[in-house]
Figure 1 (cartoon, rainbow, N blue to C red):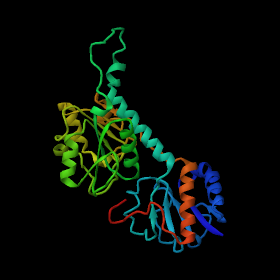
Figure 2: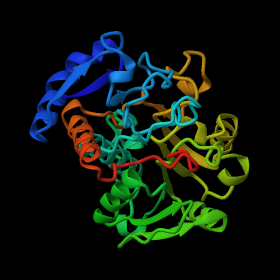
Figure 3: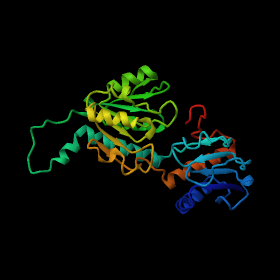
Figure 4: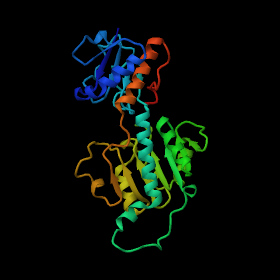
Amino acid sequence: MIRILFADKPENRPRYEGPLTRAIAQTGIVAEIVQPGETDPASVDYIVYSPQGPVQDFTPFTRAKAVLNLWAGVERVVGNETLTQPLCRMVDLGLERGMVEYVTGHVLRYHLGLDATLAAQDGVWRHDTGVPPLARDRSVVMLGLGALGRTCAEALAGLGFKVTGWSRTPKDISGIDCLSGPDGLHAALARAEILVSILPDTPGTTNLLNSETLALLPEGARIINPGRGTLIDDDALLAALDAGRVGHATLDVFRVEPLPPEHPYWAHPKVTVTPHIAAESRAETASEVVAENIRRGEAGEPFLYLVDRSRGY
């Protein structure tokens, strides 16, 4: 029997216990799921981990074969010097579909001009304001072409949008104009009528959208950020909004969460704040990913979604 430590907040255990137990049983593995304090750390084979859980020192877990993160982001654990075990990030169908629906919904909202339409419910029939272009004539740029970014880019291309994707390293995705590197970033931003970021939080992405790069956007560009709050220089974005360089921003992630009540984003007329809801790990689908990685660990097969420590994701 293997021992699995569920190292999330205790109140989350009931939500995961049933799905995780079923998913592991389906692999044929016999396992015991325990919480911190219920067993000797040296007896733990796998750690199902959340950064908001009680485990921050991995030193005692001398037998653990892997740390299986329940979150897509690993920025809060990847730099932990006590973590010597393999670290796997979460990529699951529920999280993926949630992100696709969030991104697609807000891209269509901007594309169709729904904010202005809904704000003008005053009894005046405005039929002379023009119609939006077709999706094929709208340029959407996706920053980040990992598992989530690629899926979102493909969904938007499937709706007919002209989609450009940018990533640090070259990618080749059918139907997506893929750019990379610093020159590729500048070229991508220059065509971004609607800009979506699903980049991870790494030293290389911090303040990637700053006064210099925001100035490359087409006048009135829209920004959607369900990736990481550190991507954006907040002061630079507010200045770009005030100057009209950026027409509107929908932000789901922030440097400080919950976003403080006094933060200027709350009251800004060109900002939509959503409370980090774009993509959540679902217990059922996340448990399937965890169970598959445990099966792989026991079979000596490569783990899914193994984090590259040198890249930070």
